[in-house]
Length: 248
Image (cartoon, rainbow, N blue to C red):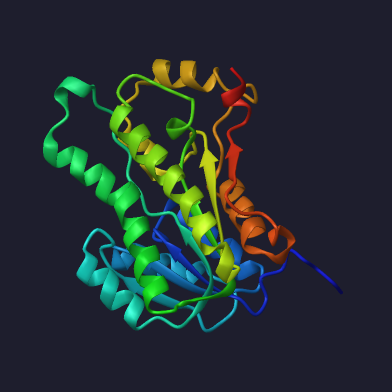
C-alpha cells in the first residue's frame, strides 16, 4: 500500500538520541521503518535508546559534537544517510549580567556550531544522499517568544534558524532539504535544568492555550514527517509546535 509518510529503506542519523526529543525521534524513525544511526555522548543512556528501537541493523555512535576532530572522525566512518535530525542541545537560564564567557561559548558550541560543523563534514565527505532531508531542532525562544534569562539560549537558536535558511538555499541544487522544528516547552530531562519552582512552572503552563507542555513524541512525529517523501517540496521552513504559545 502506498504510504508517502514511511521511512522504509531510509537511513537516518539522529543526534542527541540518548534522551528527550532525540530518543523519541530515534524510536519513531525505527517504527516507521528507517535504519537508525543514533548519536549521543552518554554511552549508557544511548544503549537504553538502542534497546527501544524497532527492527534490526541500527547503529549507535558516541561523540562530542562540539569537538571538530570527533565530528570529522564520526562522519568519516559513517554510511551515507537519507536524513539527519539534529537534536543535540542544551538549555540555559541566566540573566545577561551574570553570563560567563565560557558559558556563552558553551551554549553556542552545543546549540549552533555543532550543527554547522556536522553539516559541513557530512557534505565534504558526501555522506548526505541526493534527496536527503535535514531537520534541525530549534526553539520558539529563538523566534518571538521571550523570557527573562533566556538571552543566550534564544540567540543560539535564532542563529541556528538563520543557518538553516541559508543551508536550504545552498543545498537545494543537490536536492537536499533543510528545515527546522521550533518547539515550545517540552517535558524532557532538559526542562529540569531550568530552575523553576512549582508555582512559576504552573504559571508558565497557563500561558499555553492548550494548557500543557508538549511531549517528545509529538516533536519526533513532526521530524518524521519532514524526513518523509510527503514533505519532499518543503525546504527552508520552520515548523512551530507549541500548543499555541506563540499566538499570545
